[in-house]
Length: 258
Image (cartoon, rainbow, N blue to C red; front, side, top):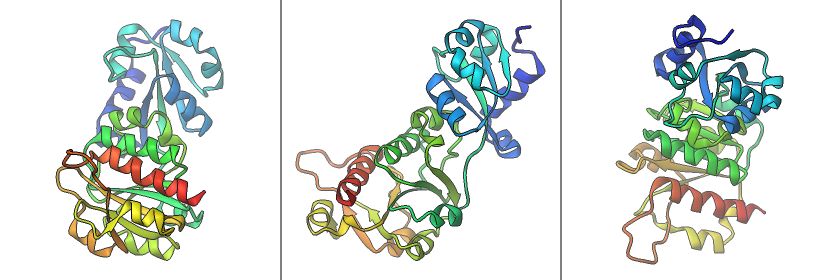
């Protein structure tokens, strides 16, 4: 039996495109073979929807899934949020953990996205933090839902690889108590990233605070940080976007810590 867009299970899964339904159920959608593979490795998949062709092509993924539901192309298109879906969409359990639990693992590198509303940027920071070897990413204050479809896609599976935390804005003290220095990124920072790298400051366990491109970091977080750090601009550009700045800072720490 192949499910259609009107099949109740497809209808229920499609509702997870809305934040309200994701919050109520503790579930979300992961689209495409790369995300599904990461979700399966994390034990987060509850049900895998796929077109017959995709289930055949990715038979290894289907074999690992606890429940497999073949769907028509129309049903898959309804579940997917991309223009050219790759034939697989998984219903997954949300994987976020409390901040205290994540910090108890003593991560040496943490990224905090504070009130960042753009899902593409937030997902890219997740992916970059994962690549740089960070242990956790904190979505602080009124930030985008980490399980927003665009955020999950931009993370390219990394949402399943490290600890994802949703917390209130005031996280600096808890981060410091866990042995992390708290560095806030700002264009007007007193400290220069290159100088901190040269002076060996970045070799210590670090939490980086990143704000939205439109508004920067909230004043309360800037005030709570141990240092305010600017990324040096050598050319004519006014600034870096959030994802690029996060990549530069996180990789500077990753290099120093190694």
